[in-house]
Image (cartoon, rainbow, N blue to C red; front, side):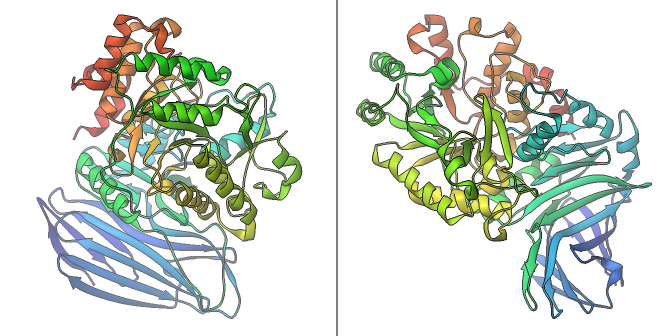
Length: 606
């Protein structure tokens, strides 16, 4: 069977053949955009593709300006249902998949493959992307969490060069270091695949396919380019991560969105629709504030906070919303009581900040615990474990190994409730939650909960306790965090230096690149946080042009504006620069940003 319909400004043909395969053709350009889309379900017991079923049932309905298609595939083990919603007014398609266990025994569901396309895509052949130094293809890799690198990649060889930084560390073995990178970023060192989490875009000449998941609360999702033998594939995957499905039970994938519109419009459509599906809050105000981190780091002391508060009281023209105490007040990761410097003073600081007419802010890494913490010693069962039963290593930092807490564990949930009730009680109203990926790493979770569900439960508990307080997420699995945070970091930390061999490590350039590449989700999923503003150039090793580019990036983002300096040491020129960035409507220098991230502007150009 086949049927045709028109989209605005162009005509696409959507073809469903008798075997359940789909194709999409651009009738104006006379090219196949996607040819013979197939579907797959991966079980522990076996994998089933479109051709591996005994029976197919199809239903097609028209509702208003949409066509809804349902295809059910049957065999003696499962029923696989593929649903499509096609928009008649715009070149968009929504796809979902579900499975019913028809057998008499439990089955284990690993992956829904919502579409699987081989070789020829958007009028080109993926072989070019994998085998050429510079190909006609571009692939937009979104990245797993805040610090995971976002890239626009012209070829698979270019991607391998981007992640070929030396994997060595004075305190970790190579095996441990690779484990940390996989836990932290889902960064793929596979020689035959390139995956983007949550969403991705493929471009061939002037043809685009924007492909992203609209829902992301329950399952791990990826858009993947891969090579298998002599064939090349584009695939969208929603992974329940070994869900045990009992006889008669029905399991649903996350919902996928495809858009063939020009790129800027498609990204806007995707950001808006995914925000709606995930119930992201509307009309959030981008705040301005002061943070202790990039000047005082872990050496921050109460007198530093008081000194900067006193400065602000004498400069009412500097209008800030919050004052945030960062890392350095606590005894340990996982032991959030005040250390000797702050003992008995944290509550007084929060009160003083409040009476000075600012929101008191605090930094917490709720899912991260140090190897020498009491939690590790007394509550080993609270930790996420790898397949060998060892704690999953989240990061080596502060001179020690740090592990992830399992947010699915009931006692961890109680711990989170008490932790945030305590900080509310002593007066904090603004919360920066950091290293959040530590609660969503690959591993084994309580009651066989998958890691996306576990992480989501953890941040939902925190939101429930904090109610309407302002939450900024950082190091956060991005798609799974929508609807919880007011703001979220979308880049690696900025730094006092420009470059790093590791594209996910703190550096001014890594921060700039990610902030530009993730602009399209700003004010849809949350307010983007481009990280702190550094004003004293002599504290950095940046050139004048790099220093200016850092500031132009912050102006372009129009997101959170946070300064991290000893305010008492700023001169008139630096104060004037801060006011210019914080309060003026000056247009950022696109020419300068284009010089440092040219691939973005080339990619966006039709």
